[in-house]
Length: 117
Image (tube, rainbow, N blue to C red; front, top):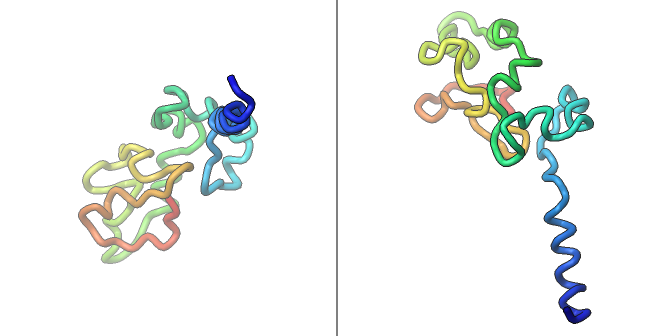
């Protein structure tokens, strides 16, 4: 292989071999980044984490309480919805590598000011 081609190909191969970094890193996930990708990617690095992987650390009951609303907005709880109850698939709304929008917002226009995917 000639030297010019090697100079072009080697940096590309090196870049492709590096793991993808999470975009919107959350401080509470820092120990998981240090532990490695497979600490969340239990179905393989090229697939979303399973709900079981998320639920090892996140408690659905606590999330439902944390996101509970009152009055006219009482039924707008993304973690305890009329459609899914407390069983909405985690990765349908949340993501580390790419921004996402709440699953509810595909049909509804609820305002979730703290939602960050």
